[in-house]
Length: 382
Image (tube, rainbow, N blue to C red; front, side, top):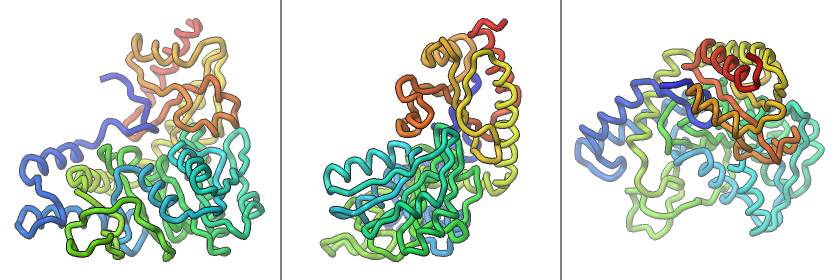
């Protein structure tokens, strides 16, 4: 089976309950939610509603109809930005963003003339909230920040930034791709207006699942238009939630898999999951320091990061290292820019990228030990 250390891209393995739920739904139900009055369709409706309610509770939100299902965090981010921003608007973001945010912003800069301010960060990936407040302009219409960098792992001060945004009435969008499921998120306490999340990473659900939680009363125009299963004679997209943003057939089997993943996380306890990932990250930082000529990026403190760790070996290309880890040792890591070129500019790796391990709940210390021994052999330390 090998050693899987790419959980920042997608978590693996999934809890067995997830695969079982998807399989049984497709085998024994298979009906579309919101599209029928017969028993199996109504059962699909119930399962989707239960997942919506579970997500609301999971993120400490009290209005489940404003939990919108999307295909992934990228769609959620595009929905918000395209639905809010108009010609000439100003947006504040971090210097650590994934292309899910950055490409969307740059496209709107080109097509709608929006203006972008990227707040500087330290080489460890820390952002000062005061810099966000100083960057606010009269026409600032959105603040968008990753919750944790997918390159450096650094956790951003979203609660403090959200408080600034709330004070000035500016909507605050948080990309929780790297934190949802592994780091406690409380929408109200963290001052989050719009929470974009994906199901296939820390939430341990299937690919093709994700969502947006709307804790804001402003206007967001729909990204897509089409059938919703109700009000079919009305020629425009309905204005009520969640139908305003959920067009076309939902990924019901994926949503049901996500439901079981959420139940698994609740059963294990998110604090238990976080504690294990912190211990593994601390162990990885300690053991990787044994490898000659290694450069480790980001904070060296597991309290300030999620389980993402980037590094390079001097004198050996990351691609060669990743290839050997896979072919000779059956160890799977990520290499490259990780779809986040702005973060690499901060650490000076925009040309070569980095090797990255993404620690997950099902990893063990022995996985780190085998990685370290393999790296030592590759670099000629043994």
